[in-house]
Length: 116
Image 1 (cartoon, rainbow, N blue to C red):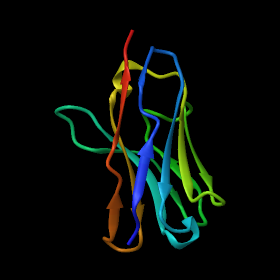
Image 2: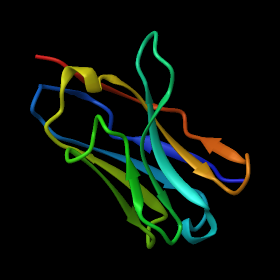
Image 3: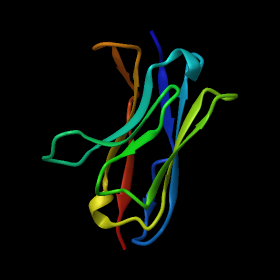
């Protein structure tokens, strides 16, 4: 098992930046993939970014070039650096850890609101 605690959500103006954090209860080296998802009201949960243990990072088309997933293995923490934020980025952001096959764990979510 793994517990995930997210933080960093806030209200930010369009064009602004925000960094989300997700602290895992175990080493990132023991986790198959770490990712960020988001869900806006009335929408399905969608993948934002995901990084494999030893591989590269995948980004959703809507965030490519604006968002960056950063892993700090010394702190068991995954960050989502979000730049050039748009109103359509407004959503609850969730951290997910996959331990293999269908064994997924989710954080509690953190609200990001982009509005002037």
